[in-house]
Each structure stands twice: as C-alpha cells, then as structure tokens.
Image (cartoon, rainbow, N blue to C red):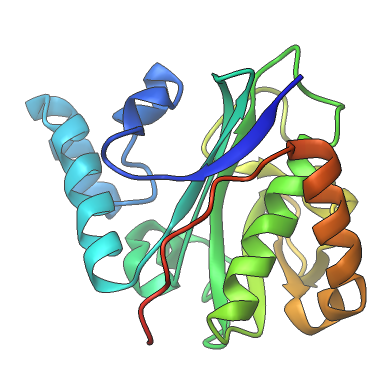
Length: 205
C-alpha cells in the first residue's frame, strides 16, 4: 500500500473533503466568514487564502494519499494568517509558534498512524524553517469531525496543554523536543509513506 504526503496547493485543493474545500472557519474572521457563506463565495475565499499564504509565507498544508487516493490533510500557518484564532478564549497563540489549524483522516484510514506522521511531517517542515513550536486549539468535547481537532488527539501525538479551558484548551508541541527523534521520523516516513515526493526548496524567511 503506497502512502505519500504532498504539499497542499491550489492544484490539489480539490482532493480535500468537499465540506473542507469551501470552509473558511479559520481563514476569515467570524463576520466576514458568515458573509462569505451567505454570498456563496466561501470556496473562492478559501482559494484566495491558500494562494496568499503560499506566496507570502510558503507551504501551509499537506495532503495524504494512500494508493493515490486522498485520505486526509493538515493545514497550518502563523496565527497572523488565521483571523479566527483571536476569537478563542485561550488565545493568543504564542509569538514563537505556528498554528496547527486543522487536520483530518478519512474513516477507514484512522488508527494506522497517519495522524502522527502528519504532525511529524509538519514539525520537520517547521524545524527547517526555524520555528520553535506548534500550537493548536483543541476541542475537549469533540464528538464528530469539525473545524477543531479533538484535544485528546493532540495530546496523543505529543502536544501539552499550555492554557486550560473546559471546551477549547490551547496545546503546544515544542519542536526542539522532536530533534531527538528526527532520525526516527525519517525512518517512519520511509516505512509508512514509501517514496515521499520531493518538495521544492523553501524560500528564506
């Protein structure tokens, strides 16, 4: 079974789950997001956001494929690019961190380690780019797929709670702690993903 992670671009945006392709929960502030939904322009706003982040900051997501079938994705960016993050009671995201915005693995492919590999791949990317940590807002009452990731999932892949909240805790993964298992990540990627598509050289910050 061939598995690979590919950088998210406008060319493979259509490989995200349908509801996620036009979701602008994170990409716009609450008022603008509601207006885009009412106007039917949320899909265009999503494309515009991804294009702007790619041009201004660089790679901001990965799509997971198993035997060339898209089965999941992860999205991340500095909090300055994520207007919705300021609306959370446990905000702001720390200035030295990139926000893990959301991640999803299709039913039937969960429980195979893909979620952990996604997070490790993001960590590896951000380490190369000089960042110190990843932070995320978790859902402590998660029941079904939504725009927030389950807090339990984040804890399971190595995050620690930095600001408690009964519903939306903020969690953090120190990237320097991943240095000790960097070689393990390389081996895991080779074993779980097979031939990983080479990524373009990253622009200096």
